[in-house]
Image 1 (cartoon, rainbow, N blue to C red):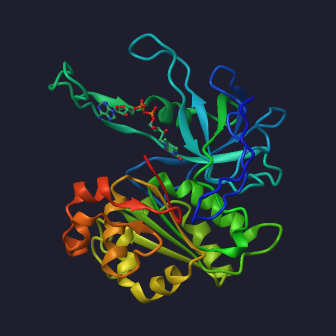
Image 2 (tube, protein in one colour):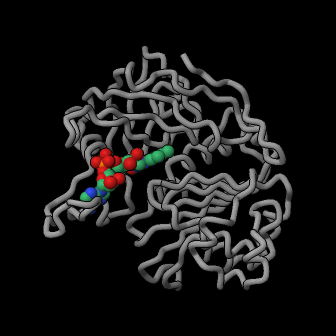
Length: 330
Ligand SMILES: Cc1cc2nc3c(=O)[nH]c(=O)nc-3n(C[C@H](O)[C@H](O)[C@H](O)COP(=O)(O)OP(=O)(O)OC[C@H]3O[C@@H](n4cnc5c(N)ncnc54)[C@H](O)[C@@H]3O)c2cc1C
């Protein structure tokens, strides 16, 4: 069994919490049972996102997941080539103690992939615009409480909290279901058995419409109860809090003084999860506000260009986050 229980030494970055990985591989998945499936958007939204919890009791996966790790789901049936579907990964949105206090029930935040069919490769019919339904996300969202599901994991060891969470301060940036790991991490940091961490914890959640905010009430409640937790929203396609067209990095740019104070502390960490497009704006924002030090490495070819004029392609390919800037985009 390929378990990994060494903390990840990250050079000039934090030592990350030790985790287990690959306790159940795709050839030997465990059978879990769905115990909860509820809509988790903020009112009536155009996207369908569910808080989906499974019970792993009695399986070797019970108690093995840490926030930031993912579990795999094997959807039944065959793909277009007649083979069993590949595993799809879903970040756990639960704290270390799970949804049940024991780590046996873990949740994720799953979004139905729904679209019109578009050509993906040479030979695909460009006129085919029939309904496209993602295999695994729709399978999961269709399941009912009591149904069985085949699960693998844990996956991932580089996007987890530090081993000594109380020694750090945090900026979490999410779009869409990228919020999943941060629900778990924020709960670990604020509501853990050892009491809340002393440092500041900022969460920036980005969504196209305010109805797409996920776990909104839960984060509002946590912010109400914990003075060191700050919950910010960036809404890109509607007026929200008097602003139009805000992406996650705009929250940092608009509150540069607050975030400069936070990020100047060499124990501060940035975590980013969600759409890959998030990175470029944040890289530019850090450089434009003099906050790049310790978080990103700017290549020579961009060093003399004003950050807001950086070419997106070059920025994406050549600017490198440091070990204090942990990124998981998909
Ligand atoms: C580490 C990690 C964590 C993740 N965590 C989460 C999570 O917490 N929540 C979550 O919802 N997802 C998460 N994902 C994404 C998840 O793994 C799946 O990729 C997602 O749910 C889509 O899977 P699916 O089987 O529904 O879609 P699939 O059936 O796999 O369809 C997606 C694929 O179909 C093709 N396609 C897409 N659109 C079209 C179209 N319009 N026409 C034709 N073909 C198209 C593309 O090739 C695309 O890759 C995570 C991914 C990773 C890597």
